[in-house]
Length: 71
Image 1 (tube, one colour):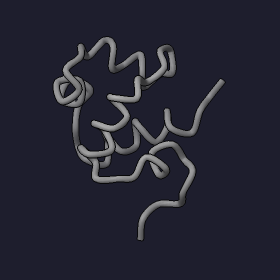
Image 2 (image 1 turned 90 degrees about the vertical axis):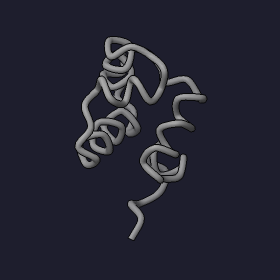
Image 3 (image 1 turned 30 degrees about the vertical axis):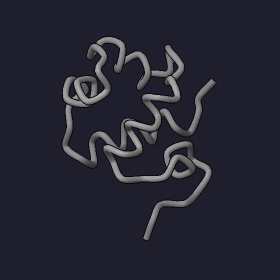
Image 4 (image 1 turned 120 degrees about the horizontal axis):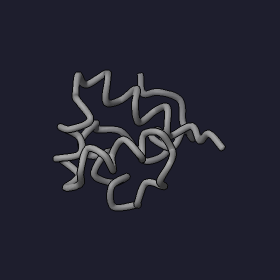
């Protein structure tokens, strides 16, 4: 099952010109585990969701695909 946040997670990372390794470091996890989140192989923990929203300066609703992009 493909969730909207999986695509958004990758898009946000690429929009911020960050590597998986850089994002993983910000989350305090490994690049391998982050790649699993981005593929949808593992569910993203809430504490990582909150960290990613802070990192990219977006709301959780936007990250989860519940709101249109900010203007």
